[in-house]
Structures are given as structure tokens and as C-alpha cells.
Amino acid sequence: MSDIKFSDETLAVANKIIARYPEGKQKSALIPLLHLAQAEFDGWLSQASMDYVASLLKIQSIEAYEVASFYSMFNLNPVGKCLIEVCRTSSCWLRGANEVIDHIEKKLGIKEGETTADGMFTLKTVECLGSCGTAPIMMIGAQYHENLSHEMVDGILDQCKTEANRKTYLDKVVVDKY
Amino acid sequence: MGKKILLAHDHVPGIQGYQVYRENGGYASVEKAIKTMTSEALVEEVKKSGLRGRGGAGFPTGMKWGFLAKPEGVPRYLVCNADESEPGTFKDRYLMSRIPHILVEGMITSSFALGVNTAYIYIRGEYYYVLNILEKAIEEAYANGWLGKNILGSGYNLDLYVHVGAGAYICGEETALLESLEGKRGNPRIKPPFPAIAGLYGCPTVVNNVETLAAVPFIVNNGGDAYAAVGIGKSAGTKLISASGHINKPGVYEIEMGITVEDFIYSDEYCGGILNGKKLKAVVAGGSSVPILPADKILTLASGEKRLMSYESLADGGFGGGTMLGSGGFIVMDETTSIVENLFTFARFYHHESCGQCSPCREGTAWMEKILHKIMDGHGTLADIDLLWEIQAKIEGNTICPLGDAAAWPVASAIRHFRSEFEEYVKNPNSIKKVKHYNNMHNLETA
Image (cartoon, rainbow over all chains, first blue to last red; front, top):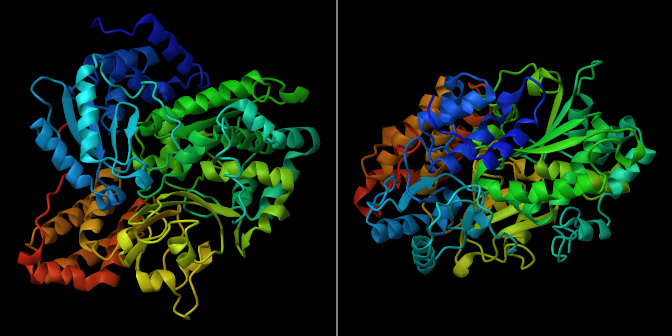
């Protein structure tokens, strides 16, 4: 058994989630718990962390692997502290997504799918994020950055560099801006 | 101004919170339903309202509710489909983040009508921040006695939870959603049995879209007839339209069904016309899956009448000359848009999102992306255009779930209406603007 395990605080959250499903159906909590694991264990799912989640749910490890490998938000390889996810589907493409991706590639000196040498940024292109009316858009952690200009991208990425914490989907973000 | 049912209060300051929502008439439908109505009467009102599923299929909601099996001693479930992932669609995100309590209220009233004691909201993983908003609203509903044990002293119990996905378009298909909610890969199930008979954990289950459930409070408060009086014909009520692309005012608009497409695109109340004064070239009217139509066909029916924003009018002309209302994801393209390149983004999308279960879809979507890539790179032949046509025709109708059809229709319609553009790419490869293609196959998702 590896020594990977949740903090007491995260374990309490995990147990609360497991209790939402009927007796004997605790496997339902698999995706939510994999999210907790990815956020807590360096932004990706190692075999050890998937084994740990499986053990919490009393399911076989393979059941966690097959789910983790199906869903695009689960990273099965290490990623930078800021995973930049840029939407590339129709509406975003119409409003300049390819140019945003080009701009980020140039700025960071990496290609789509790569991580900067300092481990700060990974650039990933993704399918429709449901923000077509505020295209182009990128997501970093839980935060949607909408109506992007290249200047905005610069500002956001420079800001990321000054922040110590890894960005995760579980981050609490400011939302009310309609 | 058209009638507002869902977004009547969306700009009231503080409407996200319980207090303001309640002061604006919130939770009245729960009181009315639980204190004065039977579940049969509630289902009857929803049937009378003519409400149709707002996720894209447009199936009558009351009929779906009527199919729910009610065997003794077996739990039933209500699951809200908040996996909004159809390219061009972002209405549910707006509704949930702006007025989360309208969904919570709709789910409580609907659960009571269906005799459900446990309900889930399945939300796509990318909307994690919206999950936090919903959880806060649910907490407030519990604290004020609208959820939990013995609601309003009636003896009725209901628990409501949010369940998060992790990035998979296919989980918007209701049986894939249920698989995912059970902690599995999102592979659609073979139907029958339908979820109404054997859904979540094999129990009778209703799966409804966010916007559908959010319409229930109005129907219960005002009666099914009041809802049916809004809209046009079998397109009752209002519809949230997500407007994006080359328009002056992208955003979510609640329209009364029956306004003209022309009015929707050009009026300042809605899209405000085409960006930078350009001309309209094409519209994808109901999310990426529905047939694309050129400007003349989206604005005008074959009869010469103006096309309307309704299920029937958008479908007028069949697949040869019409399209579908779908999810209401309205993507507008100006005269400079390459239809081929736009189609490539759709083809890449469906290839990425195919679950891989059925070979026509798994293999076909990959081939369609590859061939479009080849054409865009200037290496296409006229035979490739025919091959694309053949592949889409072999996917359509030959898969377990509708993702196959959804992948085929954009290809078929783009070739049907814009074949000359594909031919231009083939005949004049040197005139093609060299574009970069971001492919699917990066290494982050696979070990």
C-alpha cells in the first residue's frame, strides 16, 4: 500500500460525498473522488492515487482506471501548476480561438499538449466549454476567462506566475459578473 | 418585449440568494403543489402545458413523466441533466449560475409530482464553479425547510444532491449520464428498457434538462393552460436561446416561440445584427448537431414565408431544406466564414467525444475528421467529398445513441448546401489560407 492518502479535511469531504448515494452504491462517488484526488495530488492521477480512491470505495483498481481514462478532465500524466485549457470548437474558433492558442504557444515557447520547462504551465486545447457567447475563452483551474484578447491572456498568465498555489477545478472563484 | 418565464428576475440584484428569490415569488410552486395538489394533478398540468424537453430532443415532458413506472417498494429517481456540452449551447450555465433556486424549486415540485425521494443534478465537470453555486442554493433550501424530512409538515421527504462529471459530451445522452452517475464510463445503454422503467441503479428514473425543470414552477403556479397560451402551436412556452458567433450581442435570450428568425438575428432586443456590418452567410440554429442552413434558407421557408423560431418552423423543409431547434444553440456565421473549416471543428469534436462503443461512430467520426483535415490542407480530391458523404450516411441510424446522427448531420448539411466550397478547396489548393490544425491526439489524457 502506498502512503498516498487524503488530508483529514478532504477525507471528511469525501465521506460526505459517499453518503449521498444509496447503501451499496458507493461506486457512484468515483468521479467526484477522483476530482478530489487530482486536486490534492499534484493535478494528475497517478496509479497510486487511483488505487487509493478505489480502496476508499471498496472497488477494484481497474474500475477507477477505466473511468479516469474515459473523462477528458482527468490527467493521467503530470501537468504544470497552471493547466491552461483553451476552447477550440466552432463558436470560439469563429471568434479567434486559434489565434489565442498561437499567442500562448509563442508566449510560453511550448506547443499544445506540452509543459514549460519550469513546470509552471501546460497548454491544452479542449472541446466546447459552454461559453460560446463570451468567446474566445480559456479555463485555468475552475476559473473561466472570457472574451479574451491577447493582452488579457498576457495579464492572466503573468498573474499566474506570481501565485504559489496550483490551480484546481475545486478552487473557489468569483462568478457574479453578468 | 416577449413574455419572460425563466428569466423574469435574472437581473434583480441578489437573485442568486434565497431571500431575494423568495421575495420575488420563489418556492410558491412547492407550497401550492404539496399543500393543495395530488401528484396525478401535477402531471396532468405539465401534460396540458405542452412543455417539451429543452435539452434538444423536444419530447413532451408530461408524457415522459407519465411513463414512469411505479412498482411498490422500489425507489424512483429524478435526475436533472446539467451536462450541457452541445457546442453553441450555454443557456443552462447562465440559468444555474444566475438563478440557481429556480432549478432547485423546479426539482422539488417535480420530485413531489413523481413521488421521488432522492434527486440528483448531474453537472458537467467544467462547470465546477456552478456546482458550488447550486450547493449553496440547496443548503439554503434545506435550511428553510424546502428539502429534507417532512417538507411543509406534509410527511413528504426529499434529498437533492449535485453530482459532478469530468468532461464527456456523451454524458448528456440520458443513459450515458446514468452510467456516469453510477461511477462508470459514459457508454450509452441499449434501449429498451427506457430509464422510466429501469434507469438509475435499475430503478424507474426521469431525466430532464435544466431548462425543462425550471419551467415547472410557472406551470404549477399559473396552470398548464397559461403556459400553453405562450408560444405558437405545439411549440408552447418560451425557449432559452444561446446566441454566439458573428453577432453584435452574443448571450442568452429568452424568446417567446414564434418570433421570426430574422427578428432574432437583426433586432436590437436580441442578437443586434451581424458583427462589423457584414453579411449573414449561415446559421447553425440548434447546437452543433443540427443541419447548418445558408442565409436564405434560415430566414425564409420554401413557401416564401418567414421562418420562425419554433420546433415546427425550423424543421420545415425536412433535412433537405430545414433544420432543428435542438438545444437552442444558435451559431451565426458571417460572409467571411469557411464552412469547411467550421465543419472541421465539429468533426474533430465528435471524433473526440465518441465513446467508442459502436464502430460506425468510432471509426466514422475519425475518418470524417481525417478527410476534412486532408481537404483543408490542400490535398483533397473530389472523390474525398463523396467519401465524406458516404461515411456520414453509414453512421446515421446505425448507432446505439444519437451521437452518431449528431456527427453525421452537420457533415451532410454542409455538403448539401455548400458543396461548391468543398470543391474550391480541392480545385484551388493554393488559394487556401494555411491554417494550423490542433489535433486530438495530445498525450495528457492517456497514460
